[in-house]
Length: 441
Image 1 (tube, rainbow, N blue to C red):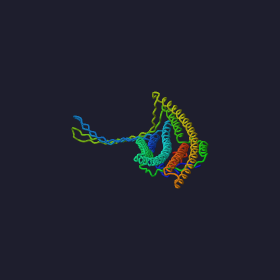
Image 2: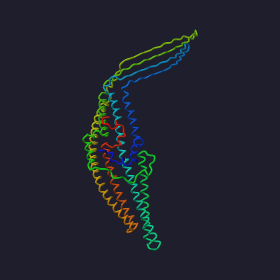
Image 3: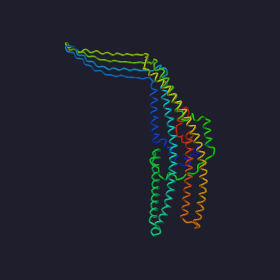
Image 4: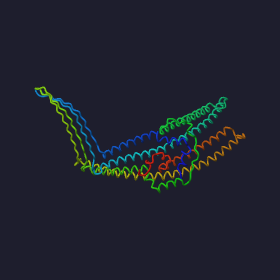
């Protein structure tokens, strides 16, 4: 089965467009993108120990030495010193450090994918909420319109002396309260839209682009159960990016322990250096006033092996090993806790999705009955057997049932969206690079 066919993105092109754009312009994803860049820099830093290091020291010297009743010496020269250092054998510690950098980069990629998955679910929920608020605002506005007509009639009656002042005062207070409720609902809708725009990274979103209704979701009674069964059969829980983050953290602790074990062992490196001293000396004899000039050039080339041995570090190595082992146990516990929570969440979402589908079926039946009642009222109004006010009330009832049906549809969409999200089969995740999702990558 294709989850894309039962998500609101298929019906709402504007939502689909927003979800795609959010990957590159949402503030949350921009932050995650920077974290990816930091992980890349960290990976390069941890791998730098495997590569040779080169150092250069360049100097120019001009020296004058004058001594009373003695010769004056003047010297100038050019000096340079080049040194190369290549680690040879560090008991695997440098390779482990480079591997840790690679794991951190993978963790950042998986966390990027997890952040986008959560963002997609949240944006869907908020956009559907905007649709619901817009529909509710329309219902409230229509009810206010009916109330305004009734209040206008009451004012006419009051002007003719047919209503007491207390009655018209009560009616006026009620209509003002209803106007306030509509104004508050409109303000809340606009506020929710601004929150949605900030989350999605949108500069503008016109009211017209937000629909005021949704069609009934396509649904098969066993589709949630079948999707979950496929996920469990493939052991999908262990392949989710968040589970892999915990797996990588456990592996990192193994590497930390490997590094800590060899901290007190000698480390061997190959080094080479080339030194050149090019010096010119000029000496002036005080008696003969003659200049004596000499020039020397000294070159020195050195090659060899260097060993560094930290014999005792105040039990820092012991601390590092204990910390690595404790971190590994913590990672294993976090992984198991996550898997248990994921299984329970999947079970709950499956149940809630099926219940929401049943609620949709019932609300749709009620909506069909309301549509029939409204059609009958409209026919009665055309025949002149009921008043326009009665027709307006019947239409208000239809709007209420339509809002109830919309609530049921949105509830099903939300539950289904969360389920396909935690199962990592949300079609929107295909916008991510494949390496962010592929198991073991």
